[in-house]
Image (tube, rainbow, N blue to C red; front, side, top):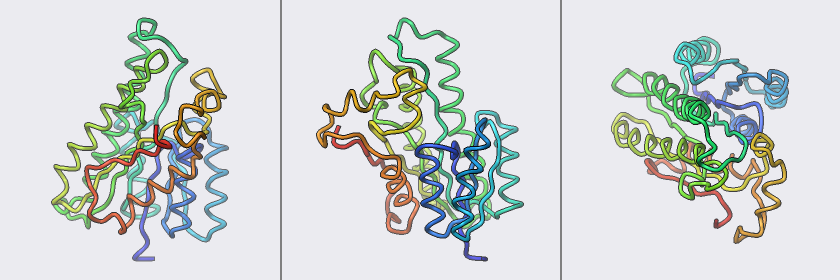
Length: 250
């Protein structure tokens, strides 16, 4: 077990996060599934992973708060070992709205959860992975969105802005820590079949818009997980500060 790698997947109880956690387990990683509210869903993913014969824990933590993030990483240190891969997957959106109808409170909450969670978790990961701190290197993969480039007009400009901030942080951090043994990359999913669309008030949004996708279909969460796991693997060992646009050509 000394060579076992450890991955933390934030927001790992559903959708892209859940598929990512399960795929890492298939690759032999010990897995930490972070969640905020849905313990039942997190435990369900954990059971699937444990059946594969690898170690897995679930940790309830609000990763937009520094104290919770510090506790999350301390639990992983204790129960699984030093993190090898961090997947910053936590993210929320609100009901579709035009720009002028987005409240200050809503915009602040989107930025706090989507951007601060990435910032705080990445800080803790760097402290453990960096050669500078006695680490042996590692990988950070940030789950962004094609909305960071399209701006998501008339629907989620606040969400798009938060993902744009994540992309900038991905690039800047990658350049800072490249010589310290840490690779930092991002994945920008397009229209993917996940529960998140229901949070935006339109559960069938992908079906409504799929005709605009060159591939004429929405994506599946596991397809995004494949990109994430590839970026964490040795197969992408010379890739950092880069992005995979997994959006069917959109």
